[in-house]
Amino acid sequence: MRNLNSGNFWKAAVLASVFLTASAFAAAAKEDRDVVYKPLKFGGVQEFGSIVEGVVANDAGIVSSANPRLRYEWVDHFGTFLSEEVIVDKRLNLQVGLGGVFEFPKPEHVIPKYGSSMYKMFFVGPSVAKAVYTFGNLEKPVFTLGGGLFPYKYNTDAVDLGEYLFRTTPYPATIFTGGLLFVNDNAAYLQGLHARLQLGDLTVDGLLATETSLPPLYDWSLGIVADYQIANGLMDVGAGVNFKRLIQVKPSKTQREIQQNAYFIRNGKNYYGDVGYYKAQKDFYAATGDSVRAASYQSIVDSVNFWMSSSNPTHIQQSELNYYTPAGVILMARASLDLKKIISINLGDAPFKIFTEAAILGWKDYPIFYEDKWKRAPVMMGIHLPTFGLLDQLTLQFEYFNSPWSNNTYNLGAQNVAVPYLPAGAEPLFSKNTYNDVTQHDNNAWVVLLRRQLYPHLNLSAQFARDHMRTVGTNWFYGGRLEPSEVLYRNSNWYWMAQLGWSL
Image (cartoon, rainbow, N blue to C red; front, side, top):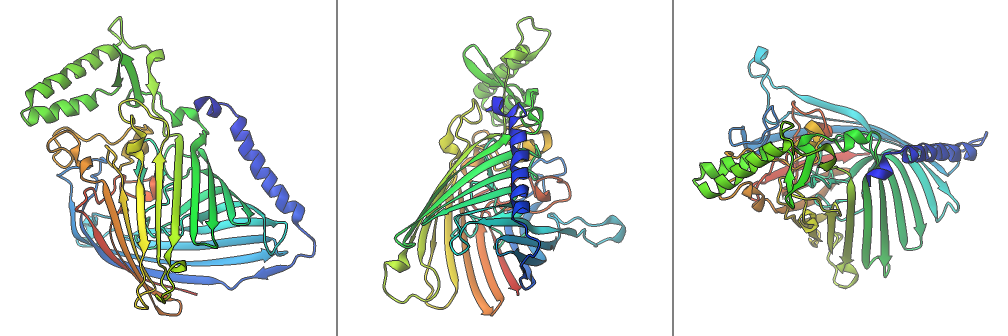
């Protein structure tokens, strides 16, 4: 994949796409324009609740038992937004919006000068800034083309878990849910180009998005998402692919050629270039009294140090090193079945559907850390249950993700290295019976969402979940300033959250 990214062809292709999009808009412009201003939209959201149990990283990015635990930690988020939509000549749709979220970091930081005063964080910026042009028949448009900054959601049934194509990374395999808000924040925010082809019941989206959240920044990813409606919506099936970081603005930053990102073969076996990985395992087994395993890993430590030492005449040459990369291919498939179209009983207005989504986070396998793609394959199942008029929505979701590594972006964010988070050997938070065996106890995620309209334009939601949420922190300057690790690091961790939202 790297040979595609190393040249300037793909960069030129991006510029050409942007130029052609702008040219299409310019060519469609008229002197006497028909401009329609839609009513200004505005709204707000207040959510509050409690993280029953969780953990956050310390200032150095380390997650350990010495860190402050979140136990019944109170959470309070407030957000507001306004947006405007303009339609020009019935074909060009312009959207612009501004929003803000205000919340305290976790753990809360006391300002020393003022005693009990807490540091409050403000996140203000564009919520949408998109232009879309419709070609052909306005009543049943076949093709639209646009771009900008916009939320994108391909799985309308996923209330929290899912949407894997654009809310995950392949190497390391990580999953995100929520954002600055925990409830009803279930779309991916993309910056780039968006094309849509509509042929009857088939819809195909093409997206060329730039990376502005997780390092390495500015790389471009190409996504293709297809959706097909069967029997007038009885079934809905979809599939997609995301060529993550297909176009690398600076390949040397995307695939860093340093020891912490390298692996090599010696005597027919693969080894990681950073000896600290093996030393951590030696330390763990030495601390637990397993002298045989400790001696085995000490032997690997000595060997890797010897092979990597330039003073050794037979040391590993630069040409023998291979390097991990965060670029990869993410695959997704999903389906839903509308049971209301089968059952003739009046169940109320709430949806009654079963749905599922699965993905492979990185099709290609790499030695040592990424040897089995099926351990990078989250599977989500869900159901919208009827409530016979009591609620407008009751949704349950469950996810299974058998990854051997923690859901953590620290190494990617701190060093641009595409290796998983490797805990210290003596850290009991991650290792109990074997090294890093906490990952055997974080495979399950779940969510229960309830929603009810209290009054027109006023909705109340409640969410109970063990998902992949991250809190904001004062130590992080990438990924929306969210924690590198999911806060709910074990199956037993969870939170509850209530949200009151209003809009006009």
